Every structure is written in structure tokens, then in C-alpha cells.
Image (cartoon, rainbow, N blue to C red; front, side, top):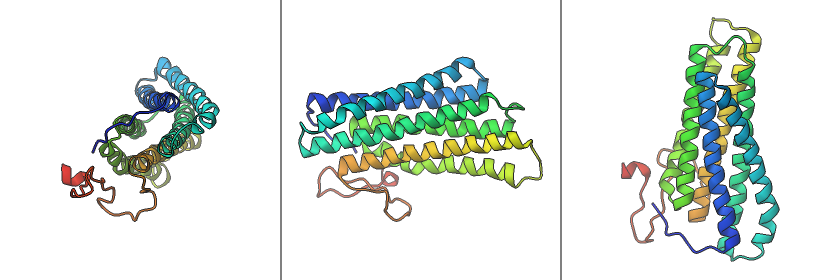
Length: 240
């Protein structure tokens, strides 16, 4: 469900644009991390590092400018600026986690086993798609991508659990240093997925003014508010 964008003052517009750009940088970090896992590309490795630095720079800029900006706006615009602050904090953390994972994998010996490569690539791909959906949802004030993000986080959790089972429960033994680094990398992906899920939850709060973070966990719980209060409520499953 899309909401009509509201006219923004320059300070809000500028910071919102910066955070939208940060979503794409986070998406690029996930894309390049997947490329690095698949191809051991040094260019991809350096691209992950550049994304992490860029997200750090963006977070500093938002932190420096938001105090002055928030004194010039209405209550609704202040909510948007606070959303920008929450967004950039989670995106900066995703950049840190992606870079940490890349560094661990770069020095890994032996090289990635096939099953580990498959699961880590799957987690990177899901993370990339989640961040793309967050960007689309924030740009258009559309809650359908946000709802998809909230429901998709479990795919990263499942892949992470598969990695942990393989290294902690399997009879096949791997070198300790190898298993430790693989487990920490999988955990970094799982935490990055949690941060992406936070972004989806913040979109609900921004668009509808309600928090879904503490709602009971049940199928279809991420319902979309109708544009017309008299309209029937819809879920993503209803719209499929």
C-alpha cells in the first residue's frame, strides 16, 4: 500500500535522500560480499570495505546535521527525521557486519567448503534483497516491501541454523579455526538480517505511527493499514 509523499523542508529532504542512498550502499555491500564468497574477487572485497567506510561517513553526517534540522520542522517532519536517524544506525551496523564477515573469509584456511559457501551466499542474497525492499518501501512509503522484509528475515535465520548444525552437530570434523570463523560469519549475517528487519519495522512506525516490534508472533501479523479508514484491512497474503 503506497502513501502519497508529503512536501518536505530542505533539511528533511536532504537527510531523507542521504538515508535512501545509504540503503543502496548497504545493498551494494551485501551484493559484493556475495560476489566475494562466490569468486574470491579482490575487487569485491575492497568494494565491501568501501561500502563500510561510506556508511560510516553517512552516519556521521546525519548525526551532525539532525539536531539543527529537527528544530525547524513540524511534528510529522520530526518523526521522519527520527526515522532517518534510526535507519542510518542500522545501516551503518550492517556495513560493519558485512566488512567483518569479508575479513574473516579472506584469511580462511582451508578455502570455503561447498555447503558453507552455498549457505553464506544464500544469506548474502537474502540480505541484499531485504535492503532493496527497504529502499523501495522508504522511497514510496509503501508497506508491502516492509511486510515482505519482516517475513523474509527467517530465511537468514534458517540458513544460519543450518551452518551451526553442520559444524556443531555433524560427525564430520573440521579444523577448529575454520569452523570458528564460519560460525562467526554466519552469526554476522544473522545479526545483519536482524538490523534489516529493524528497518522494516521502522517503516511501519513511520508510515502508520504504530510499532509492530512487540506484536504477538502469528501468521499474517504484519497487516497493512488501509489508505481509507473505512476500507477493509489487508494482509500481504490477502493481496497475493
